[in-house]
Image (cartoon, rainbow, N blue to C red):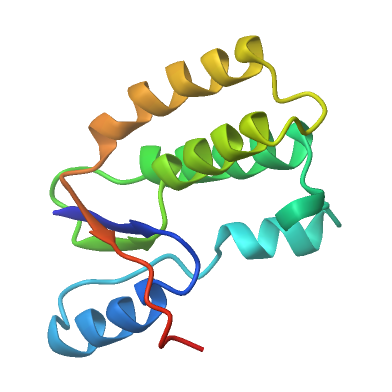
Length: 130
């Protein structure tokens, strides 16, 4: 089964993932994450993000998903839904390049990629998380 934890920063996704892996030894998670892509490619992120950054992250996430199949027991910390939510936030804030056309193309890619996941847990923001 292919599972993803999705949600805002400080919603406990990484903590939940570690706990899940501790309990379910037959699952694994990819060693490389979107954070590695940001660092390797020296991309601007967070409030300084760009359409290039968001596209690189989305493409990385989709590539990871496409490498798995239904027989794999794999769990992801974030998924393309997180990327789209962030891009939509950027559009709402008027950040350069995050146009309706850009969002539409990213949504199409995300929609197609979701067939590579069997279950998505949505994690709520937790102000108690560090």
